[in-house]
Amino acid sequence: MMDEALGNGVSRVSLRSVTPEDSERLFKWRSDPRVFKFMKTARAPIPEEHTIWMLNIVRDEQRYIVEALSIGPVGFVSWKKEGSRARLGIYIDPERWGVGFGRAAIRLAKKAARQGGCLEMIAEVNTDNYRALAMYKRCRFREKWIEMKADLL
Ligand SMILES: CC(C)(COP(=O)(O)OP(=O)(O)OC[C@H]1O[C@@H](n2cnc3c(N)ncnc32)[C@H](O)[C@@H]1OP(=O)(O)O)[C@@H](O)C(=O)NCCC(=O)NCCS
Image (cartoon, rainbow, N blue to C red; front, top):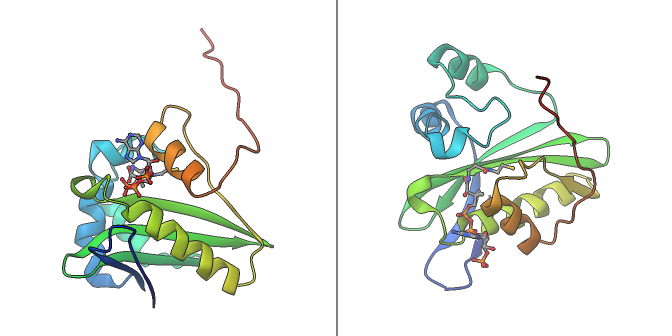
């Protein structure tokens, strides 16, 4: 478990591994349109999918709950080791956006991935996701590849 104080000094943030008891809260966060619209699937998970996702231990993937001191769980962050790269996944409880939890979680995930032998971290972001783009820039990510898309009418 690693932790860090937010800049405002109000809350400490730490990461702990996801347990089966987190299933309900993760499902709730993933089912929120403010969250799933920026996921690759762009739709709410169905309960069966979520159960499989919870049970499916993906090789080289680390899944964490973001915990804030005196609040409790406020989000989810994961990284998957792909050679020397860590592929990031993150969402914060929409009721807790804008406080700095996303940024703190990324700092901790970066630290964990570095300790896990990774040299870089990558994230796939929808170009309409201005919050996430701002967050990644703030966390010193820079654009590397851009996926181009055209509607086939
Ligand atoms: C993206 C997300 C994780 C950000 O979490 P958060 O806890 O609100 O982020 P933070 O409070 O740490 O903010 C980090 C930075 O994002 C930017 N940001 C936050 N809220 C913002 C807003 N309303 N408008 C513009 N930028 C904003 C700021 O640059 C901020 O840094 P600063 O506070 O130092 O200026 C959260 O909005 C989320 O879960 N979104 C849905 C899932 C998602 O998009 N995941 C990423 C997929 S790639």
